[in-house]
Length: 476
Ligand code: NAD
Image 1 (tube, rainbow, N blue to C red):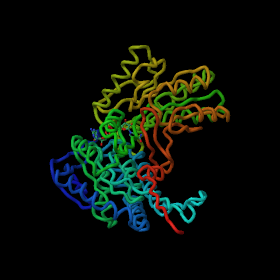
Image 2 (image 1 turned 90 degrees about the vertical axis):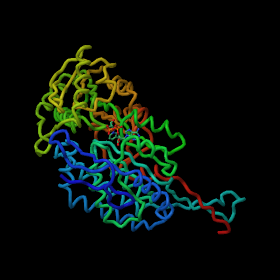
Image 3 (image 1 turned 90 degrees about the horizontal axis):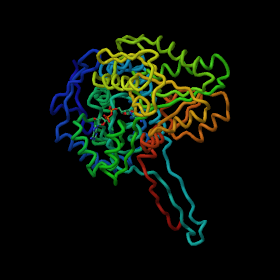
Image 4 (image 1 turned 45 degrees about the horizontal axis):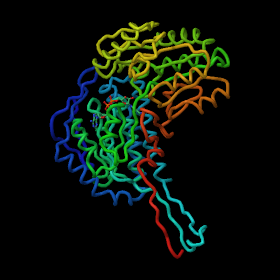
């Protein structure tokens, strides 16, 4: 079993208490150690010390480093994918997709780093400013504390590290304690780049230490991806810091009456089934709620059930498996209790509804009361509810009832319905013709309402990590 080093100021280290990483399916996936207090301090001190030098370093050198990491992930793709499967229980087919996305995320970082530039603003449009110009550049706000969740242990870490390096901001990355191994393996590739000491660290630390890092004034930016309560508690704890929150949701889909034919309804059902159950529902933009126009609701529901029943559940290491376990048994028990609660208040189970250890069977519900937790909270499990609505507008209203607003999907062949969705849905992105789970890693990504604030997506994150710095030139 590998004993992975952590990475402090760009160097491998072993230190404090042992951390045994136990995947939900195959048991121990590897070990590492929590970073010692001295190493945590060294990571922060060196990040602080290198911040000006790193911000002024050559964009070409940083872009080459990001490109190197992208290439090396691609070369070791299968190793990364199997590690993600072992530590997170993610089906291998989806782990491979995640690795391919991380290759792209680092490559976008390299491309954006090369394009990242400033603009010139003339000031002499005011006669009093004759002979003056302003050079506008984006300066890093300072060293970044990146905090990552368990469900995409490689690509969401890539979304923290690549933009930070692209703009020249040092980063201290804290991986999720349940799935730190992919981030630590990534550290091996970062160490090959020769980026300056202190420009990056990957430190597994207990949550109390993470809380202290959140408070540390030498890390003025906190980029957090994770659950809603932890995210907003961080926001409240450090009101003067720049905090980006990528949190959870209860992703919804509206299906109009006007699908443009049989094939389109088949496509909607297949996409909904796949991305409600994808990663056992453990994606922040998983499909949780479907509001289907009455004219198609019955047909669509039957098709969704049929598609869900086709999904293969089981060993995540088997490349044919579609749906694997949840991250641990406690998570599966929570999902079970929420479904039981919905059933007790009137919901009907159309398929699924059973738990075996860490696994919860892909489940389709209907007739779910709006205040049941499977509807109004984030299930983060393989559960989808399908409800009929009288109009697409009523569907949009149901989407907006939520306290969350990450992304929404709309299946319609009516352009006006699509435009209206874009106007009225209170979310970070409206996906026409597909599920809310669709994400291209280079597009701005993030939520409104309780789902968070700020944006990721490589370029959007680079803007988020930086602020306008103006240089006024006199006598030019
Ligand atoms: P979590 O909030 O339990 O943990 C996230 C990270 O925060 C972990 O690294 C954890 O160790 C750390 N943490 C916990 N308490 C902390 C504290 N007091 N101070 C500092 N750090 C602390 O979330 P999780 O269970 O790992 O991830 C699942 C959640 O993440 C879901 O809600 C999901 O929707 C959300 N998520 C959001 C996005 C997005 O981009 N919007 C992407 C993936 C996951």
